[in-house]
Length: 633
Image (cartoon, rainbow, N blue to C red; front, side):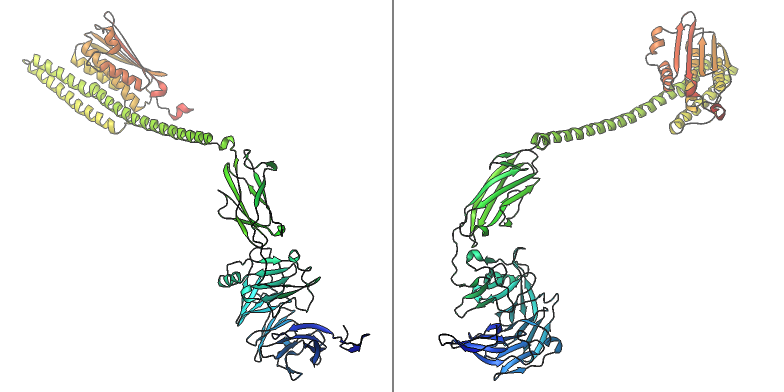
């Protein structure tokens, strides 16, 4: 535009042309234009009130007015000024503040002047005191901020990256909207009191109800809800983003005016028609892994992805229909997909599910009944109840089997202990029979023989001496039997010498002719096995001398690859049944067989009335012989 000039048109009317770069409407309803002059619209025409501040470019200054009607200005290079009798009065402004380029100016009800700059600073001036709030994490402001008063000393500031900023006594409070799709940046703001806050954005007009604002201010974690009005509601185009002209103002009648790309538009916040009809909701399809199914059908086993499509009928503004959905057993609360009309679930376990969906129309009226559908995902064979029961049965069977194995192991261990104790008792019995009791029996025979010849003092003395020897032996053998239960002897013992003594003892008890011979060289023997061999041989010699009634006894000890002991007499022999099983009530032959089995030996008893009795014991060399260093080479 050109500077204001007066001229006559063809009809004789006078027109005024004004170069205006900023416009401002004060609280009294007066419209001010700022360019190279300050002009006022009053009584149906523009009147020049004052020149622009000296030295300031046409578009580098802004004007606002306080409640008393005083005009305040902020000019780049000069700072703050006030209009006094049509002349601009400068106020002392720090140079670093005065050089800033203002983008919006506002005066609140207390008389404090607010200025936002293109750099992002917020500057306040109150009674000559100037405070500069530079951009940073505290202010959160970006360029082109606008102001509106919420309450005394509480000022709204736009231009934040997400949401709104409330400046309360120099403190900055950010409140954020519900959802990430809030339309930003905000170009203009009007606080309509009980009618909430109205924001002009590039995509349309955003309204935030008063109760939502108050709740967000009381609870910093709360995210306020909002609604938008755009071209579908009658807005002519989009909000015009043409600086530095205001984008949103409120008229004296309460209407809020907006500048669109195709004209002006207003809205009366007290008289906004609402769509009170909740939209009917329907579920259109269910898809399992890309295959469509009718609602309510059983989905195949091992389904990975389930997609549910739904819609709602709203004829006024269908694109603003909002949805919420919930799947029983999966979602603990309602999911908010916004305007999206599908829900996707992955890897659902088999079972029965019910899907619920509700919707709201363009004015937020919800159909809380909505629609629901029930579907079932069939289980795979390894997801069925019988498979779980089989696994449970298998687990129980395995535990039961392990328990039985454990019980059997414990039973065998206890049985082995019992067998060991029984073997110890059997060993004691054999030792008592083969050593101690036989010695006692021999002592009795000596005593009986002495009593038969009691008239011969020399024989009586010889018998008593022999009886003393036998009793001493009984004591020694008893102690040896007890010691054998505690320790195993490792003493070297000549088996041949032991058998030789045994044959000599038999000779003193009767008139049998006895002989003892050794074949081969003596070898080191395991003491336990050696003792068992001696017990068996001694028992055979004792039985022959006491029971055979023979005249000859031959004992042979043979050292070869195997150790053998032969005891033969020419007596009356044994009954065949006694030779095989032993005599009832006697444990001689039985003990000999048990000892032989214990050392893996072979015991043979051959008896007849013509040839007498022949007892032979053969023990494997690897059992009785001890290996020496020379043997190993």
